[in-house]
Length: 154
Image 1 (cartoon, rainbow, N blue to C red):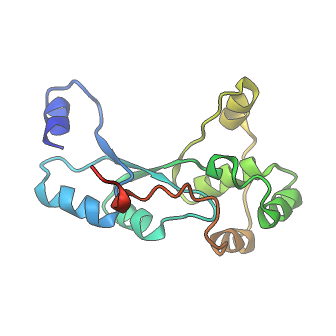
Image 2: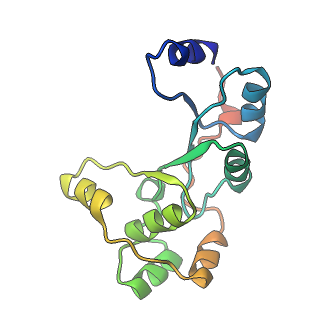
């Protein structure tokens, strides 16, 4: 982290941040940092919201960037999400992106398909009703990659 702080102070980078840091990891950085992280990139999508870490980041004014917002495609056939998406006339992918945007997160969808890339950038925004937002939040854990930063051996 100190090396990132030096790059930031030297004007070589415009922002510094974290990736896959959970609340207790962030606390350790904040206890020793002179510059607070500006962003934390996390796997977040319906079925894997990481609420404790997201809430903590928001409290600390650290932007949360959601990677894998459609669970790397694992959510596209989820029956609950299909039903909700259908009621808005959108795809599950669009529903997932809009859900995260409404939650105040930066969304980072990945695609190698040029059509999907354009669509991810330019889909027509809509508002998900509160009851549907709550239904999405209540989904059981699903679509999770299985990558847990507390279980990585360095």
